[in-house]
Image 1: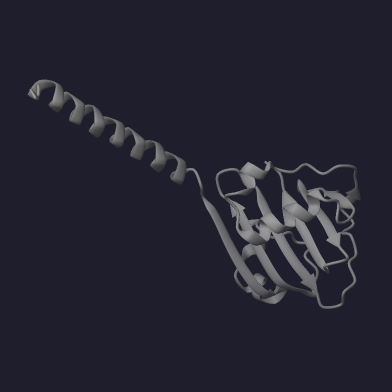
Image 2 (image 1 turned 30 degrees about the horizontal axis):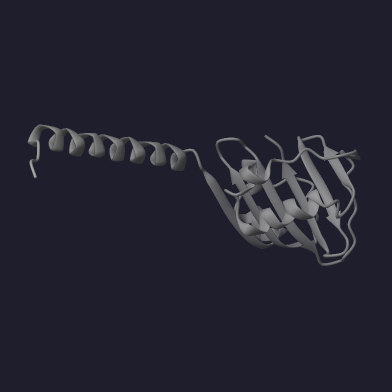
Length: 155
């Protein structure tokens, strides 16, 4: 058996180049995923962390909102918000109007968001309640069956 050293070295070099560019591609994908998440016991805790000024939570968040979970993609400004109400009574904010089919990201886009956001997306996709479009490019839906309010922004 004869081994051509030149071809063997070229094969190793090509393999290293492919590995290098594969790592560059993976790093590029990961850098583009700036998804953050946060949890707050209630509206007061969220307010103490200045998240309303940052724009990740809407000003209309009810005073009795609890178990607040928020996630957002800093690159696209797409966000999801899920919370419960201690009163169990949801009132649609004045700046929100009932609309037809809400704008939703694809299932593929939702993979980069945490589980609670994917669950909310699934419930919204299944028409768990009436969707309302708000003035701040935010959507909101009350899921009476599960006692959650879902809110999201589109891309």
